[in-house]
Every structure is written in structure tokens, then in C-alpha cells.
Image 1: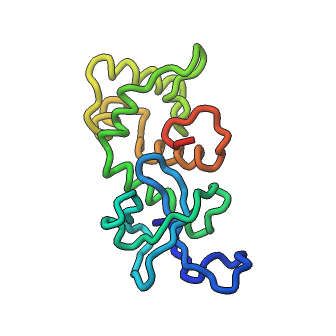
Image 2 (image 1 turned 90 degrees about the vertical axis):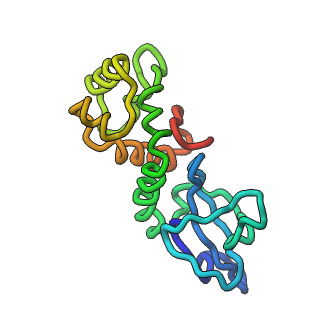
Length: 176
């Protein structure tokens, strides 16, 4: 959860405002407004189940809508990189797999080059190293490719870029 609005959004023109949680999905990184059940206690950064199984939804009444990045509150925008980094850490194998499996997009652009701070020379170093042996962790990646300093922050930064610009042509992590 990125933010909790106990009185709903201030711009809502409704007499009785509904409390809202602003959340980001862990798999497709969709931004959502979620209506909590009454009298639940929630905290920013907390994991909340919003799937199809009603008995698993301890804190969620319903999903209100999908929102765009520009509709996030300032607090949610500030919290987003930290929450993303936690998601990436918890799913490290999935994101290390991206470095192991990333392919060229076209003759002039490789999907690795879309990560912030990763240029052509570093991309070729990663490709050469993974030919020798696939990476097992972010630690191994940074150890073997000296120009990669913080892959976790690179991926988090790319996810934020994709969320900011929904018309981004090349989506690596965020669902369309």
C-alpha cells in the first residue's frame, strides 16, 4: 500500500466520502484505488491481498478503479520507489532472470539499455558475462559486471518510468 486516505480524495464531490487505499500490484505493477473494509487498521508499505478469493481479502472490500501515475497523491509518489524496491527484493530471482534473458528489441536497441543508468558498454558486458554463466543474484551481477552498481534501483527506476508514461512503447515490467 502506497497511501491511505481515511476521508477519501478531497476533490471527490460526494457528501459521504469513502476511505481509499492507493496500492501497487506486485506482479503487473498496476496502480489501483481500493476501498477498505470498515474499521480495518492499515499501514503504508503493508502488503494487502486484493485477489479474487473473498476469504483471503481481510482488509479489502473492493477495487474501485485503476489509476494513472499522475493521480497518485504526493505521499504515494514518494513511497512508490521504496515499495517497488521491497517487491523486487522479495522476487529477486524473477528480476535477475530479466538480466539473464533480456533480448534485443531491434538492431539498434537492447531491452537492457532501457534501464536507467545502463548504457551500451555495460549492456555488452552483461551479455558477455551471462554467456559464460547465468547470474544467480544481484550480488553476483554487480560482482561480475563492475559498471552495474545497483540493479535493484535500476529496475525500480524503470518501473516508475513506465508508470509515469502509459504510452511508453517498450514495456518491460508494467502491464498495459
